[in-house]
Structures are given as structure tokens and as C-alpha cells.
Image (cartoon, rainbow over all chains, first blue to last red; front, side, top):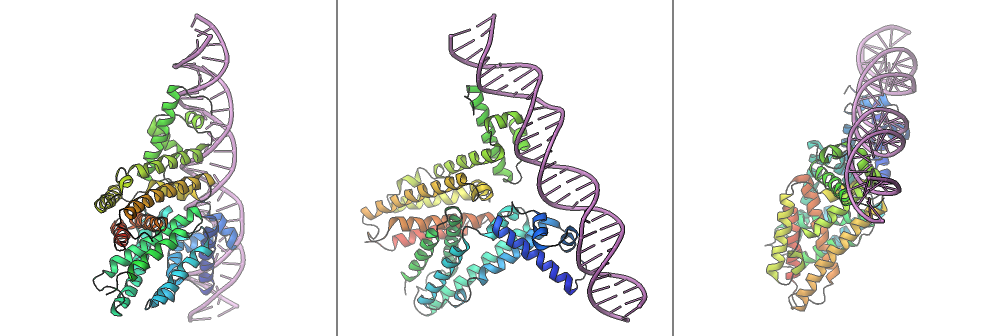
Amino acid sequence: MPALTRKGAATRQRILEGAAAHIREFGVAATTLDDVLAATATSKSQLFHYFPGGREELLLAVARLEAGRVLENQQPALGELTSWPAWQRWRDTVVDHYRSQGRRCPLNSVTSQLGNRTPAAQAVVIELVRRWQAEIATGVRHMQDAGEIDPGLDPDHAAAALLAGIQGGVLIQMSTGEVTHLEAALDMGIAHLRGSPA
Amino acid sequence: MPALTRKGAATRQRILEGAAAHIREFGVAATTLDDVLAATATSKSQLFHYFPGGREELLLAVARLEAGRVLENQQPALGELTSWPAWQRWRDTVVDHYRSQGRRCPLNSVTSQLGNRTPAAQAVVIELVRRWQAEIATGVRHMQDAGEIDPGLDPDHAAAALLAGIQGGVLIQMSTGEVTHLEAALDMGIAHLRGSPA
DNA sequence: GCTAAAATGGACCAGCAAGTCCAATCTGGG
DNA sequence: CCCAGATTGGACTTGCTGGTCCATTTTAGC
């Protein structure tokens, strides 16, 4: 990829965000390069100029973009899990976010398409899982320090379980349109943490 | 669809199972009708004869087939959650199954492709979730009757949470290849049930 | 303002995969 | 044995989509 001028960077960004938006609305399979071009008022040569790897590279860039947004959308609640009310706020943040997002999970959509084939796409998911889990685990440790959670409980293990519940809740929501499973998973996870005080 | 002779039914079945097998191994996106034909020694006219709706109808049939297998694979453990050791056996069954299956989840693969567009595909998932959750909830009620779980706990709510954890654990496994999240979710879920005896 | 590099437009290409069609061959009931 | 309907083979069509190419215009440093 050649050096970018200001204009070039803007175009690249426009293509990237346009692609992400289209994928959010119609899904990966129903998003062709021509769709993206039409939606962003760009030409094919531009797309391949900024994403020499073509569709695959663009999709990967979208995956990275969306992965970054996942944790952003939970902040600041996720970063300050230092009291039970704070945990509850986080819980509500997550539920509200996915409820408003409807049955679209752009990240899962993208990764499940190219995800488990391309190592690069795998890495995006793995990194997201790692960071997400780490944030939750930090929250658990805070509560342990505050004597609110049994110090014998493994924070990473608990965070892994909670994260799995969230993922599954969102996955089920994608099919059913209901957030009940997501709520149940979060509520049970937090209840379990609360139920084992020192 | 015309009436089926014995031979016709066999051919239809061969196509269906061949398609399912190919999808299991290579994923939906990498499965073309020609692949299925080659793998099953059939011709295009046969495929469209038995699946007039073409690819979409075939995929839906595969989804139904795979959905049916999901619960089968957990039996008999899932049907007899009447003691803590039995719950543990079920937990191990699930983990072993998905571990051996590697990072392939044919059902999620299929449904995430046509799933949230086609109502029919949605229905398959919804029905599976409903039955799966019902089986778990029945297990919870058994334990409540035995005085092993707080009767104040809502069986359906708990089952929903547990199911979400499983789904998420499998989803994460698909990307990472690790079953740790699945194990964590099951362990935490069961621990929570055990932690609230009457 | 000059020039090299970047940015852009859009025609064109190639291949693939879904779906159609018709002719030929079986099957099974009467 | 006959025949209507089921089954089968496989060539052909068609549309789409990712990707290539080159000519033209714009940008930005000197």
C-alpha cells in the first residue's frame, strides 16, 4: 500500500465505514463490493487501491473495526466494576445495547463468514475475547479485594463463564429476537458472584 | 414434490446426508451444489427434483437434520438429570462432544448463513432452543423436588442462563479451538444450582 | 508551476455456481 | 406386458461478482 494523503485516508475510511454499515444492515453474504461502492460513492479502483487484498481484506478491516466497538460500547461501565450497583449498571448497559442493536451482530456475522478459516480473523476474535474477559476478571478481583466475593473463586474462570453466557445470549437473540437469554445469563452470573461472599 | 418411490427416497436421503457431511467438513460457504453432486454421485436434475427450492431448500433441510442431532448427541444424559452425578455426566457429555467435533458447529454455520433471513430457518433454531431449555428445566425441577435446589429458583430462567452459557462456550470454541469457556460456563451454571439448596 | 506519486473513473474480463431443460431410462401397479 | 409417472444424465443458460487495467485527474513537495 502506497503512502496516503489526507484525501486518500478519508476515502479509505469512507469505504471502510460504508462497508461496515452495509454489513450491519444486510449481512455479509448480501454485501457485494459493488454495494459498498454505490453506498460510498467510490469506484472499484479506489477500493482495490486501499484494500489490495480485495474483499477479504476489507472484511477483515470491518471485523477489526467492529471488534473495537464491542468494548467501547460497554464503557465506562465495564471499566469500573467496583460495586454491586456498578455491576448492575454494566449488566443494563450490555442488555440495552444488544436490545437496541436488534438481531444483528456484525462481528459474529463477519467472523463466522471468513472467521474460522483465516488466521487473521481468528486473531481478531481471540484478542477481543481475551480483553473482554480480562476486564471482567479485573472487576471480580475488585470485589474480592472489597470482601464481596469469596477470594477462593478464580476470577478468570468466572469471567470466562460470564463471557460465554453473554455470547450465547446474544447468539440466541440473533435467532429469536429476544434478549431473555442474555438477561438470564448475566443475572445468573452476577448472582453466582454475589452468592459466594467471603 | 411428486410421490417418492423407495429408490427416490434413498436418493433424496443420500443428497441430504452428503450435503450435511460436506458442510460439516468445509462449511456452508465452501459447499456448492456441484460439490454435493460429486460427493453423492447424483446429478443436478436429481437435486432439483427432490429439492425444488434449490440450494436454499437443501440448506434448510440440512439445518433441520443437524438440529435434530444436537439433542440426540446429549442423550441419554440430558434426559435424566436427576442427581448431581447425573448432571456431571451430562456436563462431560457436552464438553466431550464439542471437543471431539473440533471447531465446527454445522448448525450455527448453516443458520448464520440463511438463518436470520428466512423465517423457516429461524423456526428451526427457535424450536431447538425451546426443547433444549425445556429439558434442562425439567432437570432443575427434578432436583427441586429432591430438595437439592432452592424451590424459589425459576427453572426456566436457570435453564435459559445455562443454555446461553453453552451456546457462548461453543461459539468461542469455534474461534479459539479451546473448550475452556464451555467448561467454565457449565461448571459455573451447575455450581450456582448446587449453591442454592433448599 | 512543475513533476512524481497518489487518487480516481469505469470499462472490461473471467470464472463460477445456481438454476433450466429435455431426452432417455427405470419402476411399479394393473 | 404396458404405460404413466418417477427418476436420471448432463449439456446449456444466465447472472453475478470479484478482480484487472489503463487512462485521466488531483495532490503536494520543491
